[in-house]
Amino acid sequence: MYSSRNSGFTLLEMLIAIAIFAMLGLAANAVLQTVLKNDEVTRDFSQQLKYLQQGFGVLERDLGQMVARTPRLLEGGRGSTVFQTGTDILDSESEALVFFRLGWLNPGGLLPRGSLQSVAYVVQEGRLERWYYPYPEPEFGAEPIKTVLMDKVLSVKYAFFVEDKWQRKVEASKLPKAIAIEIETEDRGVISRKFLLPIGAPAADKQNDNSGDTNKGDNNSSTNTDGNQQESDGQEGNDSGQGKEEL
Image (cartoon, rainbow, N blue to C red; front, side, top):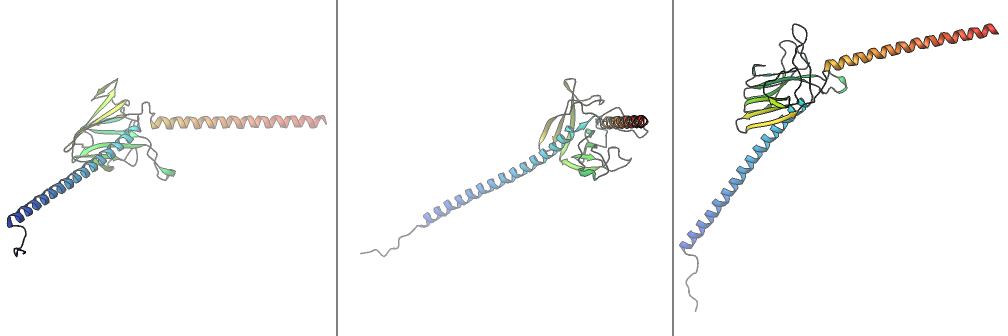
């Protein structure tokens, strides 16, 4: 005979099963939240690293084209320094760096300017900014074109490799062999980079003078050539005249 009693889970067994499933759900949710949080942190770090690489890439390109050129003074003449650095320049909140660089692209010569560019790195409102002017010698009161390279910047310091050692204060009458930059930020701490400079890069004005001398030499050569040609033509005329007299 079969028993009429129904078999099944007891209340205690059901409660235990529900508790186990609840714990598994909580554990899975915790793992999911951890993965999502780590993914967000990774994305933020990757974005910050991208900004840093872009900023240092701009610095490397500018310093790699740095040229020893002195600025023109408002009262006439030229200055004695090929770059400027200090905390009292362009209202910078930290040390600023001002210099000239070559290699400013001008495809087809469409713009009325050369390849020389005046560049400045300035800290304002906690941001490291790159300033440049459309012309190497801007008019008084001209507004620069600004680009933000890094934010949350606390301080910027520069050092210069001169006479086989790093120095914070140097005479800027010639280019150093290298420049070191130390940037302190709120969330990334202190970041340091060193950049080699093009030693012996000629000034743009000297290049223009050399090209002018070359043109002068070409003009003299063409004048001498024309003179020789005229003498040759005159000699041929005399020879032909003598031939006619003999006939």
